[in-house]
Image (tube, rainbow, N blue to C red):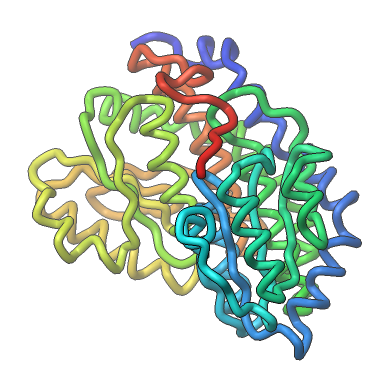
Length: 349
């Protein structure tokens, strides 16, 4: 096998993903006031729910945000379908909602039309974006800057991670969880450990030869399972489907047979046992299981630090995964910076 660690240094994806710890530290310093402002609205009596709107990697970040906000604030979080506004012209009644649109570029037309509809429906509109001076920020009432810095690789990495930490900062503030905020301040150091840690070399031959796989997680880990599946498609042209550990035992199990790969993200919280049981079950049916953050019998263990707060462990896991995904793409003959048929900014209607 080629020396993947050497070839890794050649890609923009690797360089940008490696910048994530410093960018998260920048966000912690620069975005605290605006996160506190949005948190006051979110926790106040005038807001009953949160509506998220996003595409691609940004939509996976909202899955993580939903889990934290519902647990810490006790208000439901629902995903808005952009086509309701951009194609069907639906009128919305969102007078007691925060509408949170997440977009790295802030330029997708369907998100802009969705934010316009939400604003007309009475919602407080919030943009979570990375590029300054974008149309979405101009349209919304408040902007939360992701502070990820310029991202050139088509495959988003540090901007996704900064979306996760922005959601964590918002949820911790709205829920007055000062322990969580303290852990968030310390997170960049754990991210550096995750980046330089276990090289996951045991997983390389399994996925280099694979044609398809399942990626699973649950709770705070489900959003990063979805993101990992997308990155495997984008950078390695590997068909990957993401499922909640609670869903995979239903219809999808019919696909599992001898040697079928399953990549599981094991959170270090109450969802841990559910994922552990799923991996054990799939292994007993002949699947080749890879477990990130869990030492599970009959599964290949892929190490990653947990950090000070289990709710932030997914950030460390996806940070480490990006390094592996970059190497896997190269091992399969791909270019993670230039996936076929894709552009950095995808404009949809």
